[in-house]
Length: 66
Image 1 (cartoon, helix red, strand yellow):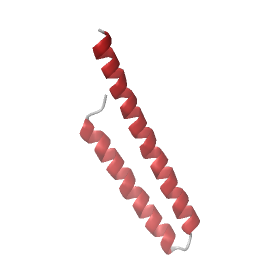
Image 2 (tube, helix red, strand yellow):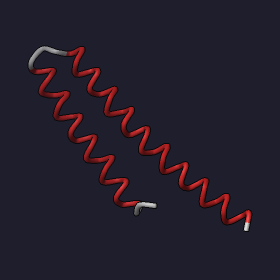
Image 3 (cartoon, helix red, strand yellow):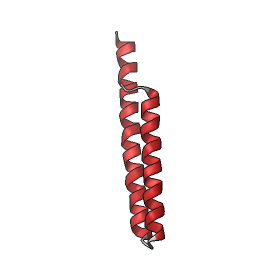
């Protein structure tokens, strides 16, 4: 399992990159693509969080079963 700070830095980095891409695309007048980029960033972060929760529940299960 990763350290908690590593996951937080990954999520923050993805947020910064997505915000930058969204700002650039909105200034170019491509709001639909900017919205799609935000959705993709949200899905990536959601996958990271779900994997972290899965690891957490797996550790809890191993603690209580043994």
